[in-house]
Image 1 (cartoon, helix red, strand yellow):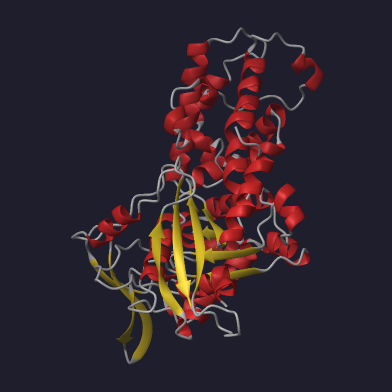
Image 2 (image 1 turned 90 degrees about the vertical axis):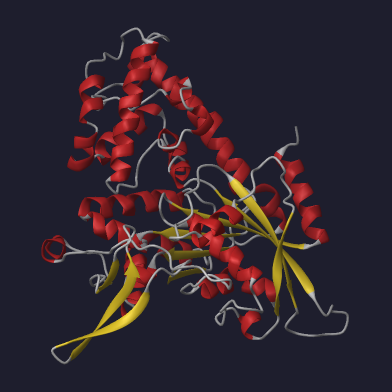
Amino acid sequence: MPTDLTRDLMDLIERGRDRQLRLAVTGLSRAGKTAFLTSLVDQLRHAGLEARLDLLSASREGRLLGAQRVSQQDLAVPRFPFDRARASLESTPPEWPQPTRGISELRLKIRYRPGRQQWLRPDTAELTLDLFDYPGEWLLDLPLLDHDFLSWSLAQWDAAGPARRAMLADWESAVRELRLDDEADEARLAEISERYAEGLRAAREAGFSDLQPGRFLLPGELSGAPVLQFFPLPGLEQASPDELERLPETSVYRTLARRFSYYQQHIVKPFYREHFRRFDRQIVLVDVLGALNAGPERFEDLSKALHRLMQSFNYGQRSLFSRLFTPRIDRLAIAATKADHVTPEQHARLVGLLEALLAEPLKNLKYANIPVKAMSLAAIRATEAREVTHQGRKSPALKGVTLEGEPLLAFPGEVPSRLPDPAFWDRQGFDFTAFRPQPSTTGALPHIRMDLALDWLIGDKLA
């Protein structure tokens, strides 16, 4: 098996033959990763033709010639299902692509004309863009690497507010019957673990984000395996770590702690190492509107999840040395998705709210001199901006079709430009309706500011 150093050396050789960029599309569940990747590929495939990419300098200057899908480097990873996603959008009625359920990647070969024609520079050049997709649920596990079983158990109890505790009530009643020093019963642990997973799934459906372990939400091939049969334990606040370690190996506590450690070492670490080590660029997608719709407890939960997630990535300027030993992402975009679900004059407020939501991570990134840009976008536009007149006054509105197939013309509500206080939640109602995608045409998918995202993420490589 090749070592990490061997992989990185092979990567350097690959990059030496051709200009190459690796982009990670990151976001929690339902943030719109699949839609973003589908649109990104579609826009670049239609570049120079129907795609509207005025904010991408290479396209605006007429230098972007187009892109083609080519064979990816890692043949063991499934290919991102672009054709299936595009077919969903072209169906009658159009449907959103199915969300990510596993790791996938796709490689694009982008052809362009260099901007500064000089002697010995070619008339055309190529950039290889590797795109990576993975379930947002699995990202939630990266902060687990900062814990042992004891600290994780305490953190989970501290983080559970009233609404989440209610969804975990069935599990909590079962787990409180266990004693730390009881002999572990495999069937009983499996049963209680499933109750915990059911509570996490219910919390996700209710709009919560900060849910661990992430594989409990989307287990894949690990379904039913003992590695997913653990859960936090209550009542450990006064427990002595030394006393806990002296419990028998077959005790409930030691069995759960062992499984937690195995999950860290054999599930979380390999995922982080194999799929995040060599990224050059990253975009973090955030469903701010969904969190606003779900209420204050869910909104605060999203904030905590994002703060922990941002701490898990390694940012910084790349060099040959750092690429071999401490690879880092050197440019970052943070995007509030589904901007088409509010009226255009609300977009600036949406960006302001996103920046307030991630104020501390953004301060840390800027202090470290990491290029970062916040924006709002709609990867695949689902609505049209309209104006309605009532009693002689014009007001902005959105026109679209709901997921249930009902035409709708409405003003969805105002987005706060800063973090809402308790009084704001009491007086403000939100109704950001979910819409179907617009009927597809043969041209590029309609969007809002995908060209801005592309210019920030790859524009410098097309100069």
